[in-house]
Each structure stands twice: as C-alpha cells, then as structure tokens.
Length: 628
Image 1 (cartoon, rainbow, N blue to C red):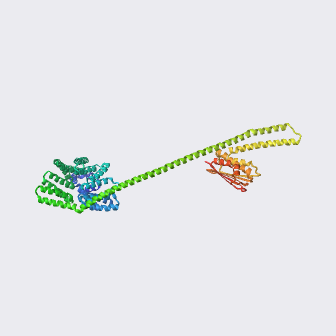
Image 2: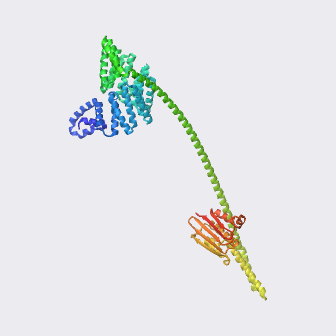
C-alpha cells in the first residue's frame, strides 16, 4: 500500500494503520523501515497541507449529505484566515446543505466562518452581522462551547475597532464558559488574546500577566501554535515598553516555532512585528527585510490590512535611510491598501453599523428587561396559581379529611347501632330462651306432676255418678291441652328444628302447627345446603315468624306462600298472602302490626325490604339479605 494512501486513510478516518501495515509486511521490514522514516519526515513537514488536500479529494467524491456537510464546514474553517474567498465559497455551499438537512448547529458554525473570512478581508460590518446571527442560533440551541468560540471572535472584532470595553465583555463571557468546561486550550487562547486589550490600554502589567498565563498553560499542553502567539505578543509588549533585548529574545523563540510549524499566517504576523522591533532598534534595513518577508506571505493570503500596515512602516524605514522616493512609493501602496479596506462608503457603513449595534444592544437590553419583567410577572402569576391550587388542594384535603372522619364517625355509629341492635336481639333471644326453658322445665314439669297426681287420685277414688267421671275426664283433657300449649309456646320461642336442622326446617315445622283448615301454607326453598350463621338464622326465623303471625292475626287470608332462595352472596325471601291487605300510607296501622320490629331486624342484617299491599288485594313482602 503506498504511503500516500496510508496518510489519506489516517487523516480522513484517523485510524492507527502504521503498526498494522508493518505487521502485515514483516518480510519487507528493512526496506519498510527506511520508507517509513522518510515518510515520517515528510509527514511532519506537510501534515496540514496533505490533510487539506485529502479533505478536498474526499469532498469531490463524497455523496452522503451529512459527511459532505462536515467536510465543507472543516474546509471553510481552514481557509478562513488564509484563503478568505475560497472559505466563503465553501461556507455558502455548506449553508445550502445545512438548511436542507435542518442542521442548525452547523449552520451557525458556517455563519461564524463567513464572519471570520469577512474579518480577514477587512469587512468588519459583514463579520459582525455573521457573528451575531451565529450567537443567536448557538444561544437558542444551548451550544455553549460554540457560543464561547463566537464570543471570542466577536471580541477580536471589537478589539480591532478599539471598542475595548465591549471586547473585554465578550472575552469574559467566553472565559466563563471555557472555565466551566475546564477547556485548557481555549482558556490559554483567551488569556493571550484578551491581553492585547490591556496592552492597548497601556496596562502593561495586566497584559504581561495574561500573556504569561497563556504561555505557561500552552507549555503544559505542549501546544506549539499557542506558544507561538503568546511569545509573539510578549515580544510586542516589550517592544512597546522599549525593552528591546527582551523583545528580540521572545521574537526569535516565536520565529523558530512558526518556521517549524510552517504557519504562513503566523509567520506573516511575526515578520511584521520583527520589522517593527528592528525599527525600534534603529535598524531600518533589517526592518525592510522583515516587512518584505511578511508581505510575500500576506500577498499570497490576500491579507490587505497587514500589507497596508507593513507598507506604512516600510515608508518609515526607507525614510530613515534617506530613500525618500521609495518612502513615498511605500506610503502610496499603504494608502492604496487602506483605501481598499476603509473607503468613505465603508467607513460610513461601519459607523452606521456601530450605531445599529448600540441601538440593537439597547433594544436587546430592553427586551431582556421586558423579558425579566415578564418572567417576574409569570413567576408571580405562577406563585399565585400555585398558591391557589395549593389552597384548593389543602381545602380539598381538609374536606376529604372531614369526609373520611365523617365516614369513620358514621361507621362507628353504624357499628354502635349494629352492636346495640345485636345486643337487643341477643337479649331478646336470651330472654326467649330463658322463658322457653322456664316454661319447659318449670310450668311444663308442674303440669306433668298435676297430671300424675290426678291419675293417682282417679285410681284411688271411684265416682258413682257419671257426671263426676265426666268432669274428671275434662280436667285430664285441660291438663293435656295446657301441657301441649306450654310445649308449643316453648318450641316457638326457641324451636329445636332451628338449632338442629336449620332455617328451612324450622319454618316448615312452625307452619305445620298452623290450622290448615283455615289457612293453606306452602314453603319453597332452594340453595340451603348448609347451616347459616346462628345469628342470621335466628333473625331470619323471627322475621318470618312475625310476618306469618301478622297474616294469621290480621290478614284473614286463606293461602300463604313463602319462598326462600339462597344464592352465593344473598338470600331472597318472599312472603305472599291473599288476605284483605292494608293501606301502606296509613302509618298508624302500618307501623302497628310489627313492621317496625321487622325493619329493625332487616337493617341489622344490612338487608332491604319492600311491602306491596292494597286493601282487598293481599300483601307481598320481599326481602333481600346479603351474606358473606
């Protein structure tokens, strides 16, 4: 693989290809070593030019829009300070492509490059417009690093126009961002370039401090380019102060570095400063030689401002040698170059642009103030809204708390009512059980004893008349009826069937004791496969018992139907008779037939009950009882 191809790949793709190539071609190691040594020497001298050529070659063949845009951006930046017209052409091509790709950040960078090219050509008004437009985009898209670079370029423009306070303002803004990013390279650059402002203000100590800071940092970074600029500025500072030996020492160091780097732009500047130093040293011929060296480079770069400055100082050098004709020629050339940069029309435009800058600055400050006021108003409004919402939230939370507390209170009240109802029902059932037990164990046993004693008397005494025997038989019959009645009352108060076989059987047993000659009864049951809870069974039994008693006592019905249906989560009970019915609106009669007791028991079970009755139309009672 030829070395040029290796270099092209290394520069374009930045890949470590030399070790790999060496390993692949180990059989040619002796020849390869010589070739690589020669190549490295050439590479160290022509690296920048070859890379630029490689980028140009890549640009002509590249079809991918995004890669092509990056190539245009880099190439236009490279030519901004050496071939301004070419830089503008490339940057304008990049602008069109960036707009198509909607790459706003690269678009802003290209505008900044156009500003740098305009600055190099002396078109400061155009440069300022491009810089400000780039700043607006970088600020909008939060590109702080690129924004700081643009602040630096704008500061140089204001420094060139001797608007030193504004230059310092933008240098400080750039420095703040680079310090936050801990970018040592750019910090070194800002130290160096901002020192020129203080040199213009005759604050030589501060200028030297900044130049020296830049030099120390660039030495740590091993940045030869930055070291060259710092040394050049220090040399110029010593020239300004009249310390010519020190100035020459720094100038020679700078010149050596610039020659090693093949930095045409930097060499043009250092030769110009060297000529000024020779003029201070009263060496006009050496000064002329240095200015001519600077001009040869400036002409190739089309750098009219540097040419004008050099010709003006060359006129002074020729005058010092009594070469007045040459001095006049140099002065004419200087004026010609200066006129190409600063014509009356351009001066007018620059003045107008400066006025426009001031106006825009004031407008921007006004906008910022208005924005600040608006933001403050928005903040106040937001605080008010937040306060209102917070108040609403607190009120809603308080209301919710009240609702929860009320619900808890109602729950406690309901629980207390349930406990009270349960206590009443339990007390009622206990009392029924006690009375039933007393009737069974007390009155029932006494009636049985009376029957036994009567039987004993009947065996001992023999009545002669039939009437006495008949009376005794009646007494036996009354005792039997009393025992049976006591037993029935006892069983009704605490039915054994309810305790043994459950609700349905207890209801059937209870209805079985009703005289079917006057009232036909029917019971339909479904789903009662197992016992319910004892409390539920007892309460339901009492409800049905009370309803049946009302039918027997008040309805004058000939038929009674009871339906009991148990489902997964509820029990439905329907009691229907064909009796005389009653008026539901007649509360006195309605509540006087045990309805209140029935309702209280249903509420205890958290159920629902409905009555459907009209005079002469019978009565239907429907109950819906939830169960776990």
